[in-house]
Length: 126
Image (cartoon, rainbow, N blue to C red; front, top):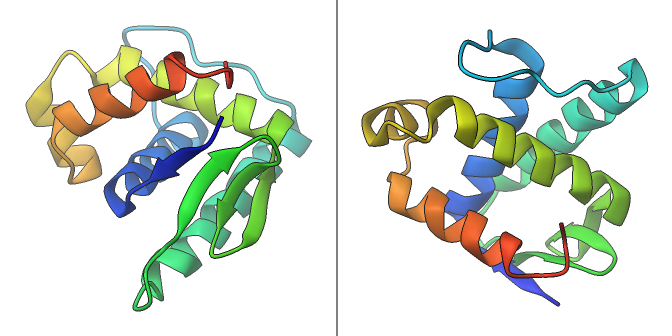
């Protein structure tokens, strides 16, 4: 299954990575990643930020059976997408209860976060 990602949805994924790596968790337990996994999450974040910054020609971002692809470059493998999905769910457990907090952290309305989670949950990515 292929999930097309908008710029805002990619921003939500990036916000979830940042939250997992650097924020304090109050409402749930932070998922545990090895140092190597954390380093890969950081690298994925940096690559995606680069593409976002230079998105003049559009992002053309999606998740498919090969992983997370932005502008025809695979920046995360399928197993790393599983980590991204875990980041999304963990981030949502922390801030998803507050539309204002989601908007403040991501710059994106909570409805778009809800939609992204619903599409991922309805796919074979989990």
